[in-house]
Image (cartoon, rainbow, N blue to C red):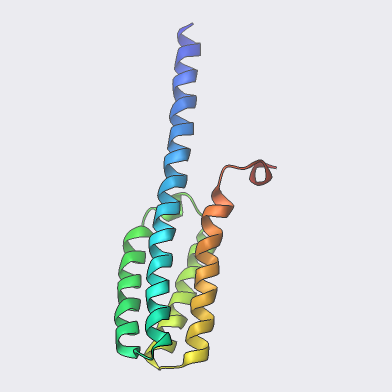
Amino acid sequence: MRLLIGLSFVFVVIIATGIWANHSLKTSTEELLQNIDKIEQKLQSNQWDEAHLEFLELENIWGGKSKWWPAILDHQEIDNIEFTMARAGAYIEQKSTPLAWGHLSELRLMMKHIPEKEALKVINIF
């Protein structure tokens, strides 16, 4: 009986941790996506200096959020995000509109993909 109770407790803890991790991941990506929106708004109105400041804020937020992501996500996916952020930052700094927009949209797609990929769904299990 004790074994059953102990196993049930461990099972509940694992499920609760998974739900918490998915929720935290989704919240983090939503915050990062909002920041990307702000950058795009600044680029749309040709406010390059403000867009660069918003991008620095995005990097700062990413630095805080990405510390716990390797425990949940594939390291290659995190590296791809960081490479894309570096390219987008360089293009914003150089005021290259098409390249900045392209890499920001790639970054947006990567961010949207993360919670979908990690969500607890039958498709993701099989």
